[in-house]
Image (cartoon, rainbow, N blue to C red; front, side, top):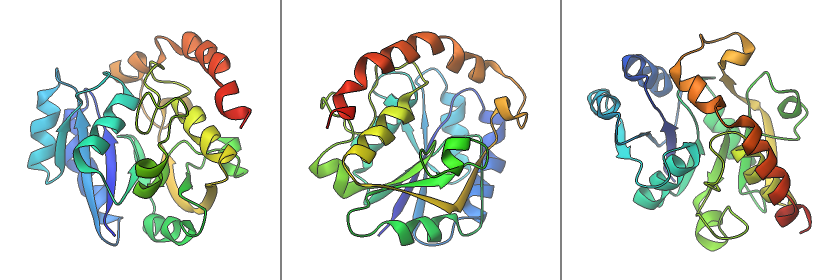
Length: 219
């Protein structure tokens, strides 16, 4: 089984060469690194290709969910990791998370080291997903997209996906699989225009989540 590591990226072309190199260094086993870029960020596309990654242009909604869904539609992966361009991978992260993907468990949450709900095994901000799950059931309850609901501008996307997987009984955490989230809210990355973009509709995203959560919470 080949695991595709989906990395949506925007406006950070200058960091992609080193970032892709580090992901490659700390990922053991059969895998492909896949960068998903926006149409107005072809510099990142070019840098990803130069660094040896597969580069895909987001052909759906121009947000994180659209990028993940675009990669899936292009690759139909055996399994994939919903990643980002601000992560630090532990050397055995993939090996440990794959060990948990068995039986009914088709979504495995990794440990971002900072979110308290993630630490307790209740949630995941990044996660390994079986392609079988997406092909047979789909990640969005209302079927509007293959993996992630695209109505959120950015925030709460992972909440809906993991909440749905939990209520279907297919989610398990793997706190031994460390993929640290170097987010600015943890003081681990500087604020930049990309982070500002992700915060612009945070309140509206939260309200939309409250409107939608009955779709899976009642399952």
